[in-house]
Amino acid sequence: MDLDMKNMRLILSFLSFVPSLGLLAAESGYIAPLNEHGVPDFQGTWSIATQTNLERAERFGSELVISEEEAIRIEA
Image (cartoon, helix red, strand yellow):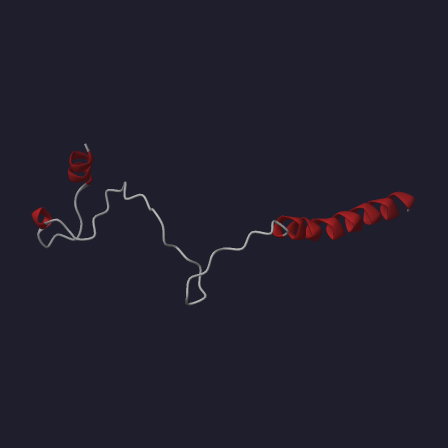
């Protein structure tokens, strides 16, 4: 019976400690910059090192999907 109470005390102690870890992480003091509309400001320098174009290349015509072989050839 004593062992069960010890285990219960240990479990309750652990469960009361775990939520406090989230509070410690939230105490960083960082406040995200906001724009004039009050939402996070994402202005800045962003990398455009991507193979995703804003417009579909004309060489694909009206094809919606390309084959795996063609994708490998394009990426090479």
